[in-house]
Image (cartoon, one colour):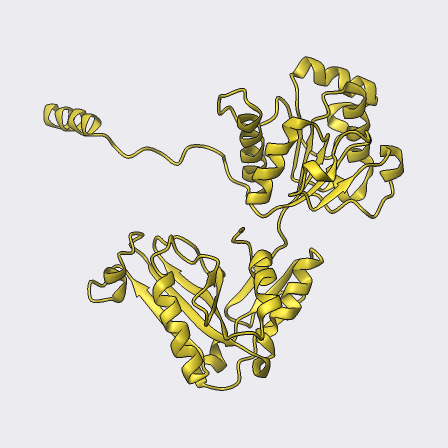
Length: 343
């Protein structure tokens, strides 16, 4: 299951009154930590948890803290500090070396379910919003008043910007699209698959897609079906259909704002597609990734899908896509010592 908040709330909602629940949220981090402020997980009295606040180090203790939370019917704030060798973090074996402060809050009808019903509704409708975690009343022992807000309020602490999962729109429902859909589903993205050919993009073969559209592309120019795209991938293996898709990307409002636009195939083929579409690359609303994807090697559909999704993910997260580095080897350290000694 995806660790995205929408997926966690979907698991919680049908069982919200069948047992006790708690919301655990990171409200402060210092130095290195697995996840940052705003990360959340849900815990129930059956011993199940949904989501991660660490790489598995904190979760068992947070379940224990949730039990205290239910017994006292109040919030609990707990800090895990790897810099303090007397802290429980050392016993838990946390390896990040930082401080993580977590607030655990009971979820029940008396506190309006921490306004998680509103939050779920916003995410289900793919709306961005802000979630205020009421740490003040939690510490005072008063009624907790978490709230969903439509805009930021700088006077509030522990205000978390909530975004819906990225929406991936794929044009072309061939066999090699299947691993792309599977990877996007694992990431928790919203997936819209489009193909005007009736024998392609069949829902039976793309069960992980959230929306499958089999329509002529001209009819989609003003369609309300298309989601507001964050990433668009065009992969028909057909020059004419690729050209129609690019025309649609240029004209359809919900597609023009995508952060990522990629077209499968070599650049000499893309020149044919642009000519067929009567477009220049500068006419498109975003830079065209072509050849598509990062250079990861491999020619299997799964490898190509990974390369595409890696590039799209980096683009949406505004990351460089570069290697984070390598730990110095003993050999390189020895060379440094020789150089330093010689100097």
